[in-house]
Every structure is written in structure tokens, then in C-alpha cells.
Image 1 (cartoon, rainbow, N blue to C red):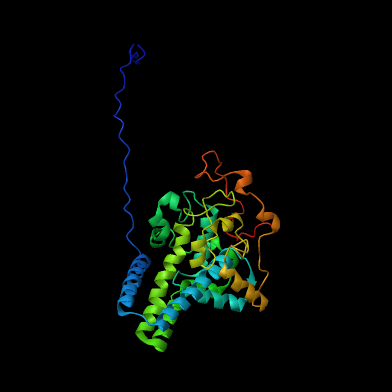
Image 2: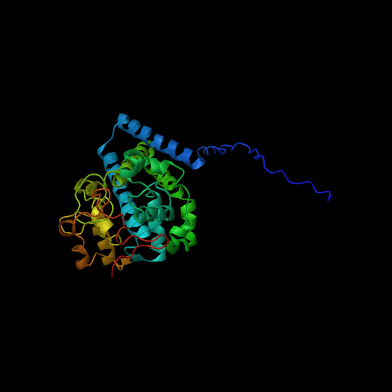
Length: 333
């Protein structure tokens, strides 16, 4: 006897515990931030105030005031926030850079660094799922205003715009961008009273907001396409009129760093006309325009459609001249 028990000739199968189903963890969505609440209440107040202004009535002077503050601030958005801070289509002095940025804040569309950095994301991923405001991907309402009110694009990411983030005065202005609207409101109240505030700021801002946002919601839906960009951008004469030239959106997506978005003489681009005048006065310089060979490149009539959303056979390639995040698009030299 060895004292060792012989192993049984057959082994009983081991009983296994039944596999448990994976645990599903539901993470509650965060509630609205203070910034979101402020934006919603502010936009609601702008619309209510516009109705109040219309009910109270307007004189020719008040209507002219509303038109003037609309045009000045539309220029600030199109020529400064967009063509300068987003795409660096011209150069200027540091002092005028700050003053133009300050003028831009009066449009009540946040600060220049946030605006420019977020817009670069739009160009980098135009009409893809990562686009900031693609109407074909997320619908009219989201492209027009929903993206503005959400949390996804709320925070400033300085990595998107390091070329301007190095200026401490711009970082300060971006953080305290409310100084522009507050200063404008105070000036209007002091000079013209309550009705001047209603028409010079409230009505004007309501029109300015929707005018600007039509480029996001409509300029990828209605209009014509000259160039075979990989997005759905379109040229629209009527949108160009109300935005001082931004409606030539297909042109812009074809060559983003150009200071003029109306590439030909019949394409009205008021913002560019003003920039050209500023260049003559020596206020800005190195005003970039699309080279002649770029104007004849990738014409749809020659190369066909290249937008995957408009032509299923097209490849989902990165848009030509798309600015990589972190630096502006300088286009072709």
C-alpha cells in the first residue's frame, strides 16, 4: 500500500456558473451649464425685445441706426472673426488686431479665439459627422442654432488656434467677450435712450444672428456649385447680400484663405471692398486672393462632383485646402 488513492477512471464534469450578462452602466447626461442657460435666455430676450421694438414702432432714424449697427457688426464677423482670425487672409498691426477683435465682440457671438478655433473645426471636417454644423448631417435647426446652444462646442480649445492664442490681450478679450455688448448697450442707452437700445442693439442683433447663421444652415443646401469640393457648399447670391459676401460659400470652401469670397466682379462681396480700402489706407496688408490657376482648378464641369453626399461614387476625402487644426489655412502659394 502506498497510501495514495487511485484516481477515478472517469471524471465528472465540473459545474460551471452561468455566464452573467454584462452590466450596463447608464451615465446621466450633465445638466445645462450656466453658459447654456445664459445663451438660451439671452436669445429669447433678443427675440422678445425685437417684438417689443416693432410694436413700439420706429422712426427713420431708428431704422437707420439698426441698419448701421447691423452692417458694421456683420463686417466685424465676416471680415474679422472669419477672414482674419479663422483664415488669416490678411495681416495687420497688433493694436488694430485688438480693436477689430473688440468690435467683433459687439456682435454677441462670443470671443475671437473661440469663434476662429471652432470655425476651423468646421472646415477640417466639413459635412462629416464631426462637422460643427452640417445641415445635411444634423438637420436645419441644429446647423442654424442648435450647435450654438449645446455643450459640445461650448469650451475654448486654444490648441485649435495657437497662432493667436499667444496674445494675452486676445485671451483676456475672449474670456470677457461680454465687454463688447455691454459697452455697446451702455453707449446706446446714454446717447439715444431706450428706443435706441431696442433698435440699435436688440433688433440689429436679432437680424445679425440669423443672417450669420444662414451660412451654416442654408449655404450647404441652396445655391449653385462651381467647384468640386468634398463638402456640399454652395454659392448663393441672396445670402451674399445679407452677409456682405459670405454667400459665395462654394468659392470659400474651394480656397479658404482668400480675403475675397466673391471671386469674380459680378459676385458682390462688400466685406472685401472694405478690406481693400483698408489696405489702401495702410491699415492692413498682404491681402490674400486666389491665384488665377486656383480659379480654374477642380471645376465641376470638368472633373465632376466629388462630394460623397451629392455623388455616392465620390471618395470621402479630406477637403482640398482644409486647415489642419492648430494652424490657419494658407492655401496654395
